[in-house]
Amino acid sequence: QVQLVESGGGLMQAGGSLRLSCSVSGRTFSPYAMGWFRQGPGKEREFVAVAWKDNTYYSDSAKGRFTISRDNVKNTVYLQMDSLKSEDTAVYYCVARTSGDGTYSFNVPSTYDYWGQGTQVTVSS
Image 1 (tube, helix red, strand yellow):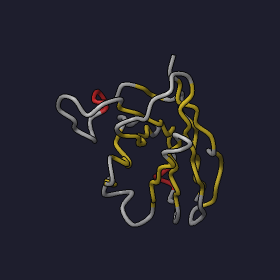
Image 2: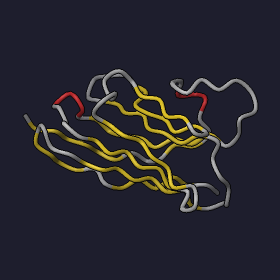
Image 3: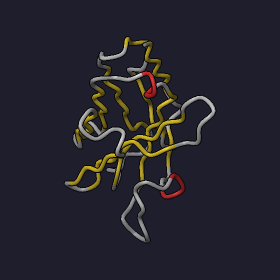
């Protein structure tokens, strides 16, 4: 059984940085894509960033402040978050898609096969 195990969330002041990590455990496979979504208080779940083949894509709110990277040997994805703002406060979810078959829309939650349990990020102003 595949599990995505996240770590690195916490409390940070505005302007600070946090680094989230997510590792794949269980069945050995190399995900086609790995990324992050988030859900803030009273908000819908939204796309943050994805690493897909040799590409990376970001939401407008993440662009220029967040950096996603993958270690394919460790089957781990990272999200470096800099210049944090209070509006970044959310539960951050790691996601993985197993294959490239079918239609892949990287910013659509239902396109991903696996989700992590979520890690809380709180940014104080």
